[in-house]
Image 1 (spheres, helix red, strand yellow):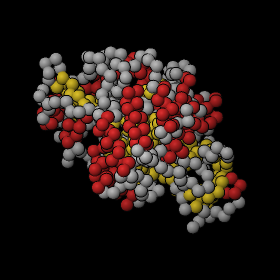
Image 2 (cartoon, rainbow, N blue to C red):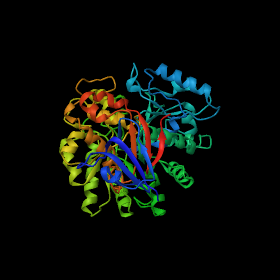
Image 3 (cartoon, one colour):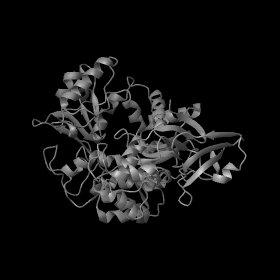
Image 4 (cartoon, rainbow, N blue to C red):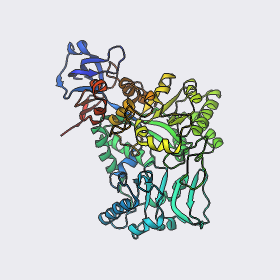
Length: 527
């Protein structure tokens, strides 16, 4: 097979012993030589790569691509700064969308509204007319439904709260239209029916976007519809990203019956771990904390929600590991992290050796950080959550002694840290995450010096978390560096982010991708 020589004056390899080179020789999708060895090899084609820098393609270790894809066709409420502004955006979307199509997604964030109160069904009724509306909060842990949605789902004042969820009620006991955590699932059939927009075309559009921001591989957290769409794209030869596809808790029995095993597949599509939830999210006041929140949107003192009771979580994890399926578990609050670590410790003591990850690990008791390393648990974290949540964390957690978004503390304790975005909760652009990890500052520069600056990490460490460790966290060691034997996944960008680290780190977030290569083939090129 012919070889391609890729040349550039500044290629960051990710190899700690020889981080920089000027040439890569690629054959059959793999790097076979670098530097002088590459330049001295036989090549059928020579390509001079564009831009100021070439680096390994980035892996998003935690992304919901079905959500991202569907959001592209739905109303976007992220920038709304009041209930009135949100209702105006919904009204405009209703006027321009096909009649009868349910309204979903939305990504509203009442914490950022001028009056930060939870909305209700009556407000939504005023702009949705005769169509079902089930709108997700920005963190995906609360939905805002209209009266028609509650009626169609059979949710009344007599409907009990499901385990691990809450149907919020007014002073008279009537549902307000706000449902948290597992209660959201009561509304799923209303937005997943025949009127929903087909997923595959939306995923193909999403794939183009992800490639355009430098992602060459992802760990997808969504469900069986996304799995089927990706398998179809793989069979048709249109899957250009590398996809590790997770299994949701509710689909565990299906995956076991089909004999799926984590790591099975090829270098383009692989079976991933099973995803569980221990708690909710900070913005919804459902992250499971040891101590109560400072104030409460629910009108009463709360420590959050244990979405999956500990005995159930323990048994579900055991089923996975016995079936050859790895496990990742969402835990944001300090109590949730402690409980998940307890469950993982029990599994290690039983002799299970599968890959274990905690997703988010946002607020952790300092005493629990060493347990990640001793139990060989990956901390799968999202740097942009820190810069998005810093004021919220100060407001509702207060000064209690916790390690919050503590990348430096985890790395110093020898814990493996993998980075992702949790898109669509945050933007999937990995350069926004790299910027957040290095600066701990928002786009406007606030706060000067960074929020809890002692937790900043170096750019080398941040890129390592977004490449090598992100891949390792799903059992891959064949991609993530630009060195012999590795898959030739790389991006060409318009600025040298390593120079910016010392001169203008705020500019890292403005990085533009000029080309993205997957397996030595050009997968995206900026117009």
